[in-house]
Image: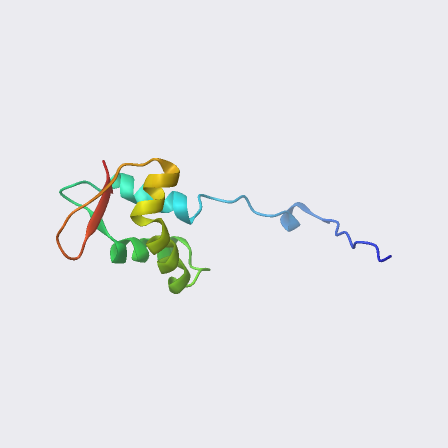
Length: 94
């Protein structure tokens, strides 16, 4: 049987960096700052996420936004996500 190879860190600089808030947490943060009078569109949300997560592709972030907003945030996170009827549609957490 082959042994699993283990790696040993030689310095603190080799330690993994602490993780910040993830993409979904960032989506919730942006939506919580939005209001009924100033809702955030999916396009504006994407621009903010691209700035926060330069290592991720805009296509992947768009997929995450479309999956999460609004139905999954409502069902799984229990958030009161509201939207307006105007185009482009804007979102906020009430």
